Length: 266
Length: 265
Image 1 (cartoon, helix red, strand yellow):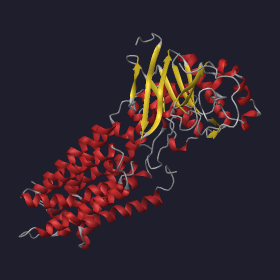
Image 2: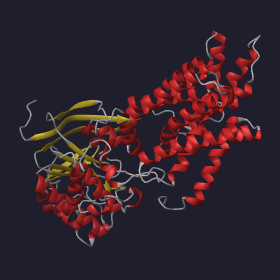
Image 3: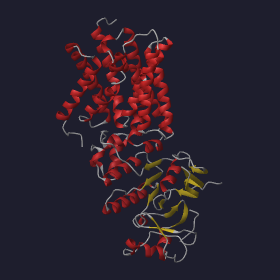
Image 4: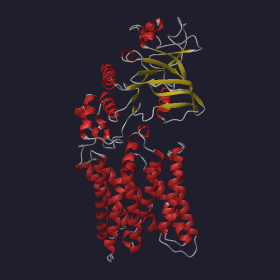
């Protein structure tokens, strides 16, 4: 297999089962230089598992992960809570594994707008502040690729839009590729280059524009429809369920109008 | 040569407390109190083993602790353990097995109380060598493991993604605890070792805004508890191990009043 010169990291033919349960099936994906990719899917679709395979934290049953030599990855995990019994200031959190100078720490925190929190205890941060601190932490190693697992979790609605704007700015400024995992599509769309829908296998993929042209998408993500209808559904390839806004899986009770924007082949 | 028995006790006790404090911080942060108990209780089995083989009991304790540390490290990575139940079974079985083995040994008259609750005032020069040697190894390991251990205590998966070899560090920490238990057995006995790990760390939390400060304070508080407990033991003619634990408890209670909510949430 030849490696795309633009490719930072790629995976092909990933199969993964955990505890006898099939998690990922035949997943191919590639992330190029400076790309923003959004990986969406319902809860239990295998999004975090795929991320962990890419990061080398999980070994797939089948398939290979290709990494460009010397690739630096900044990772923002999905769940991050610190026990109150561990006293930890933000600036100390920044240097847990990488050493950094005071100036570097301050620059990174400034870039994500939380320089004033450098001396705060991590446990006292709000959800949005914590995500910005963790984002700054991920930037410290000057990554080629940022992997953000549900970065707007625990952030209020206004804060979510701001956080996505910040992520877009970071890409513009640094040119690093970004992989965002999300179960809510509509806010992500603005900054992203490519959307991948995962539900064990990659159901469909395409530019936001392609996805947005889909009448199904418009119907599903219109302001009024958003509450009442599923996030996305795939009729043509044998799905028997839809994914609701909350990320739950519900039985398919309506027909798919037209095919998916693009099938597979991320 | 330290001739005075009280000075010997002081040197040995403070030496162990200086390592137990910082190591205990990780026991507290990682919620491993039960884990510490399991390791400590198995020490009695080590005493029996040491006597059976005719070597220094401390050597037996070290051997059993290290074997148990390796077993627990192996179970930890297979994700099957971590349950209180299993640790509880292991802990009390090891303690009972040690007691039964000791009672079955013929021709050995030994004071079980010394091993269960410690007798710092009876330490010999040879004990001091063991205690400071074991404590020194534990301290060196703690310093070497500090950064990666702290990183994986904050977030294990993030630490792994950033290159920390989690299984090796976890195993190293358990070995460290094994050395510490071998060193501390004479001081508080197997039943009270965990208190030397937990109470100073819990007391230090109130006055700390960084992990490093908490570790240093826990070391100092532990040393003060040993000093206070020993004086009390001499003054009131009480057993030294429990006296040290009570001295630590007094400081913990005082910290609740003095420390208030300055750094705590």
